[in-house]
Length: 99
Image 1 (tube, rainbow, N blue to C red):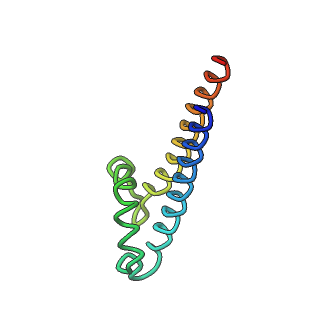
Image 2: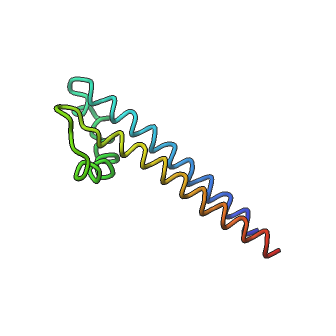
Image 3: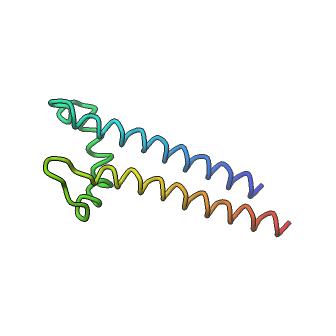
């Protein structure tokens, strides 16, 4: 029972990370389109993605007009995904050892 709940939670978190990854890609692509951020989709993605990407803008310098914060944020999301996988793998191993 507990393993089924953990598996459902794991799948939900992984789907959320994948959806967020797609949102980030669309958000980054909108920056190449004139007026992309002024569209309704752009405004929604700004509210969803900018708080996360903004963290990296504080620490990652820009090279001319190109901000590398988005790339770093995207790769950091991959590391977060690996961390979530490791935690759930540990939890599943503990459950199987307990019974």
